[in-house]
Image 1: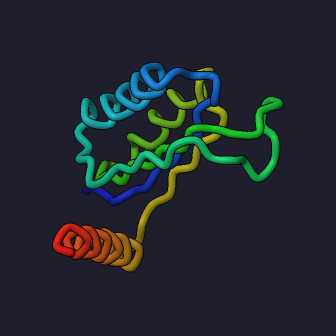
Image 2: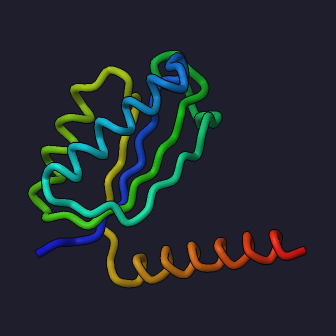
Length: 119
């Protein structure tokens, strides 16, 4: 039985664009190799942190929404902890209301994009 999850991780700002994408690819591969389906992903880019982490004030944020069996989360988070490129991470299980909200939000964003193209 698969559940839907959302994971956000913050990568250290000293990474190059290529190193950042390598990190993202690594974690997406862990997900897909273990039978999960990536529903949505979003690169939030470089953002200011609410408080310094490891003496850094900014970090690269990346969000992945995916469907996976629950036992995969421990494996994923163990890999997060082992990777020195990550400063923080958070994975949450989405209930059906959160899933519906995310889908609606994506649909509205897509409609808005289409309207901007048309005008």
